[in-house]
Length: 321
Image (tube, rainbow, N blue to C red; front, side, top):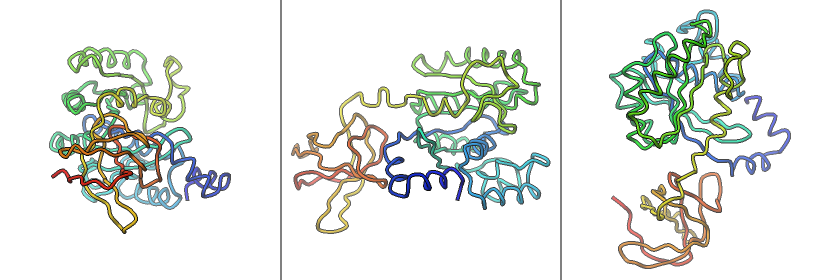
């Protein structure tokens, strides 16, 4: 068991722990950028420094680092994410890898996407379900074609929040001048992405942990917050409630005679228990009785959330095919 979960269970008990996490907001984000910019290492560092790694996982990473690691004597935290044999042998990410973790303030689902141009399609797949993109840039190389490509794809898929992390600052002696050069270059390029995208910039070292979970004393010139704080505070709900409620039904859930629910992902708008809905094309109306999720019932839900709705009336709703 990881130490963070163990401490919370000891303090709250199982019921208290589950209740506390049930109503936390969920942020889905991806890491993207060019190959070898440190995406998998960053996720490993986030999990490690926020105490979300189980003891046996950490032991396995130490063991695997001696065989296939790329960080010398230090544990290769990228191995927490790169699980395919080909990924470990080549030292790159090929498929999209998903990881879940939770802090006191928020729940997260991370999509670690490949940076190699050959696997750009996989990156787009990972981005398609996310709310925010963490775009990594190697401080030595600056803004590359794949950096621009991943930024454009994220923008085209509707992501409105970017955190641009200038990584490997330890390899440029934590130079403020180098960071500002890259920052200015990216912000100039970003003018082509649209004016409604919220872009935040941060200098980090995923390998050393600088500005990832805690602020680094090696970059006193940086006046912002560490990456985890930015992720915890970003407001992704703003604008999601806009528009009329749309809910394409993907599955009618009828496990027994006492339950009939309509499962799907909310396409737009917001729904609350007690709200009236209209089924199309029949035009029949009913009211929402429950909003059911794997983690328990919710009082409300909005665009992007996968839920099961139960209604106060028995009406026929067709599954979208």
